[in-house]
Image (cartoon, rainbow, N blue to C red):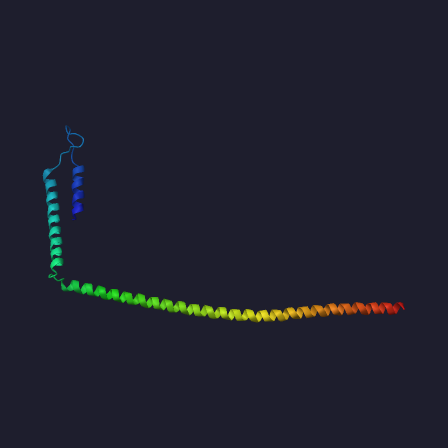
Amino acid sequence: MEILDLLDELETKILNARHGMFLAKNEAIIDKEEIMDSLDVIRKMINEKYKILKSRLEQDETGSAKQPAFLQQNIESRYEANDEARDIVSQAKKQAQDIKNEIDDYADKVLQNLKLTIAKFKRKLLKLDTIVDVSRDRIQKTAHYAEIEEEEVESDSKD
């Protein structure tokens, strides 16, 4: 049980204590042995944690106490895993950059082909526009000559 849990338990015991008839509102009857037992457990836990922290601090200061082999191996395997993870991330970034470059190159080629196609259509449209203009001119000239011939035929017939 943790110290904070014990303190919560102690607080609950105090809050749930019996109230006597002749006691003030904030006074209660508490079982002395029960409270003392809880306090003793808390003291023991604090002392144990203090000893552990003190020994760790001394080990860090002197540097003479070495970690057990399994802890050292665990730390080394974590470093290796971190190195592997960095390598994997680095490779993934490189692959992502390569893919981006390929996509950019492909898009550039598609746009270049599109531009060429548009240029061809422009030339064809210009030719078509010219053909339409020439055709309209011919139609107008033909209509004009037809009118002239009709006038000549009419004037010949009147004569």
